[in-house]
Length: 153
Image (tube, rainbow, N blue to C red; front, side):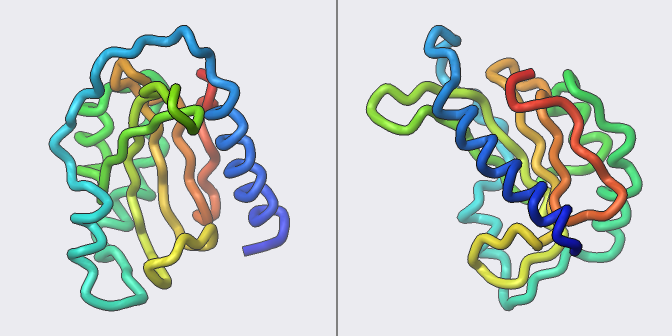
């Protein structure tokens, strides 16, 4: 991965943290929807050794169908295009006692060097709003794929 891509990923992570801390406090506070997908703990429990690499057929499906994803798609449609995610997480922010539910995100992990977070591990994150529709689609360390939408969409 070249320096430009690495800097872009770091900038994305910093921007996402900033967005979470600056999010409008007047957004809905309804209870989060449970989507029935695996949790991050369930995903990690399935990994028997590192490095982890998704099967070739899964990697091909996710990468080759990425161009079919669009901002505004419901979770069901995303799953019909890419398959089920490796895991789903609820997103809250800003950090602290007044944190509000912002939505959720799905992770498609194509490769993972270790159990630690590594921005160089190829993955796709799809952030959904409280309406369960894609608002930001972010590939990381996958050449040729560009993000769609934005954290404030």
